[in-house]
Structure formats: C-alpha cells, structure tokens
Amino acid sequence: MKKSATFQCSFEAPIEAIEKKIQSLQEDTEQPHKEELLHTLQIEKKKTIEKIYQSLSRWDIVQIARHPDRPKTPDVIASLIPDYIELHGDRLFRDDPSIMGAIGTYHGKNLMIIGHNRGSSTKEKIRNRFGMASPEGYHKALRLMHLAEKMKAPILTLIDTQGAYPGIQAEEMGQSAAIATNLKEMFTIQTPIVCLVIGEGGSGGALGIGIGDSICMMQYSIYSVISPEGCASILWRDASKASGAAEQLQLTASDLHQVHFIDQVIPEPLGGAHRNPMEAIHSMDQAVQKTLSLVTELSTKELLEKRFQKFRTIASLPF
Image 1 (cartoon, one colour):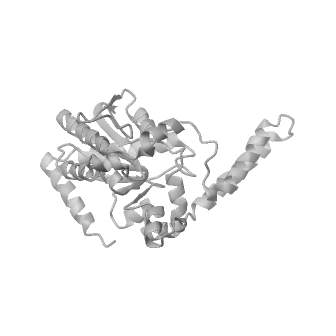
Image 2 (cartoon, rainbow, N blue to C red):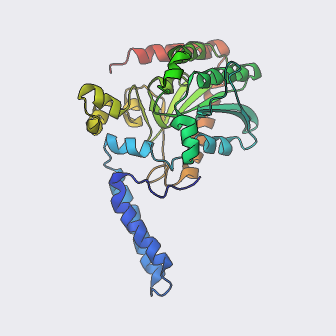
C-alpha cells in the first residue's frame, strides 16, 4: 500500500505540520537531545490527532472516507485470503476491473470476496473508473455469488464507490437493470452474505453488491443515496455547498447505526484507516470472523427470511 505524497484532508493541517517537524528532526544528525525532542513531538502529534478526531464534522468524515491511503479492496483481499484466486469476466461481454472478485481460504474455510476496486496508480484509477462499475461488473459480481452458493462458501462484499458508472455505454448496456437484478437475486442467494463499507458507499453503485445478512461500516466510511456534491448541485445548484449537504444527508457510520440501518461500526485506528491500514484491516478481520460465525449458524430458510425481514425493516425507517 503506497502512501499518497500530495493528498491531505484540509482539517489535518496541524497534524501535517507536526509530522514535518518530526521528519526534519529525524534527518538532522547534529541535533542534541534528538530522542527527547522526538518523543515530545510524538506526544504532541497524538494529542492533536485525538483533539481533531473528537470533533469531526460530517464533511470531514467524507474527506477521510475518500482518502487515497485507506485500504482498498485488493489490500483487504490479499490480507484476509492470502491464497486467493482472482476471478474475471461476466461470461456475457467483458471483464470490468472496477469490480474485483476472488476466492480463497479464510480461517480454514472458503470465502468469496467481491468488492469495488478504485485502483491505486493514476493509470489504474482511470482504467477502473475510480471503482464505478458498469453493467458487466455487476453481472460478474452476481456470477461469482452464484458460484459461491454452489460451493457453499460465505460471501463478503467490500463497498467503496461514488456510484455506478454514468457513461452512455453503461446506460445502453442496461446499468439500472443490472443493479436491479443484483438487488433481487441477492435476496435469494443461499449462502451467508456480509456487506462491509470500507470507504465510500454511493447510491445504486453501492447497493448493487449491498444486500446481505449483516451490513457493517468502517468508523470513518460513508453510505448515502447521493454524494454531497450531487445533492448540493440538485438542491442549491451549487456543488460548493457540499459540506452543508453532508450534514443534512447524515451519511456517517454513526448516523446510520443510530437509526439501525447498519448492524455494526468497525473501529479504525487513531487518526483513521489511512494512518494505519494494516491495523484497520485487522479490525475488519475480527469483525468479519465474529459476524460470519453468527450467520453461518442459521439454516438456509432462516437466513433468507431474516435477510428479507432486515430490508423490510430498513424500508420503514423514518429518514
């Protein structure tokens, strides 16, 4: 996982200033009392992070959710199922790299992981359309879900997208129908499904792989029917008012857990997953293990009935 050299959340400027002092001091070979000064700066940095992260606005959390250094789907797959085999193609048109699917051994048992792949390098991000899937991506996801069903392997979906790809070709190929088909079919998949929002959960693009027996969110992830910028553009015809839209959308993990839209908020390391991706993935691992142990105890009939009733309840929530 490469660190971004240019991106920083606007509210993290005080932290960045301290980190620059630490870096400068580490490079200074002639500084007396160097270790003592470094220790003082590390304490100051920790206190600054704690202070800032205790009073985050919803717009601040949107920035964290979109941070390029957060662990991405390929990182999570490689960590949770190191012996994974990546699976390609929808058997209809082509392979969509914005949806990644892989199967491997997870704590001694098979696990299918399907998730949005935003890409890491600039070239990869453009190729993957920043994780915005086309119909063939959703076709591939559904094909792999049915494969997991045949293998009696649980499914973990990793949600991290601004939304489905809005291009003309995607619409011509049946974008809305592909997502609608996934929504319908995921209610009938006869194997446990755990959905985890690891970054940004945007609109139907997220829901296309978002029907499951348990919905979890990372602490600083977001999940919404529309992006704050899109909402601001529609309501006020001004995308620059996105911060105000974020407050109204109530799109954070804490907001959604409070109204019982999601089942679990997975804690992130101090300062967010972008500061310690491997610790964040460890938290994901613990949560997924616990959740799978609960849902795999259910009979197929109980599993499908609970899944259906879960979303019936969500549909009646007072948003």
